[in-house]
Image (cartoon, rainbow, N blue to C red; front, side, top):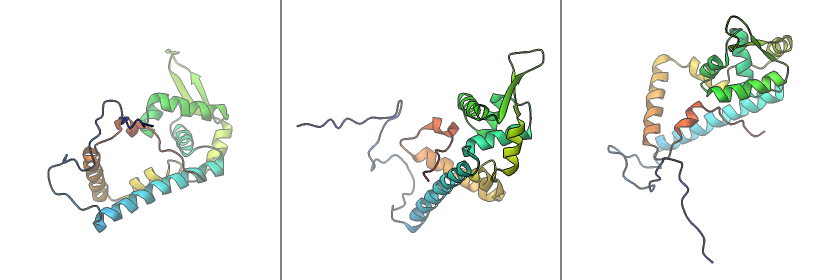
Length: 186
C-alpha cells in the first residue's frame, strides 16, 4: 500500500525545508529562553483573545467582532460598510457579512438617503443601543484595547519585531491580515 505524501502548498507560496537557510544574519537556537518566552507570550495573547471573544458571546449573544462593529456604528452613525471594514481592519465583504448577522438580530439598520441612493448608511437600533449599554467592555476587543494602552515606544518595537517575524516566515498568508481572529472554544 502506498500513501501519497504530496505537499499541499498555499497558492503562490513555496514551502521550504525547516532547516533551509533562508535568512542571512544571526540565528538563535530554538531552545533559547528568549525564544521560548516569546512562544509562551504568543500563546497567552492568542488564548486571551479567544477567551475574551467567547466571554463576549456568552454575555451578549454577539461575537466580539460583531460587538465591535455595532460599537463603531454607534460612535459614528451613518457610516458605510467600507468605513466599518477600515475601522475593523477587515475586507469589505467580511464586514458586510458580519453586519448582516448584526442586522438580522435587530440591532442595526441600513438606510439609503441623500441624492445617491446607492449609498447605504448604518445606524444602531433601539435594541442595539440597549445592548451596547450592558455589553462587556472593551467593545473593540481585548487585542485592540491592549495595543492602544501600550506606550508608543513599546508599540513601535512590537510592530518592528512582528514585521520582521512575518518577513522571516516561509509560509505566510498575507490575506489573513484582513481576517478577524477566530473565536475561542469555550
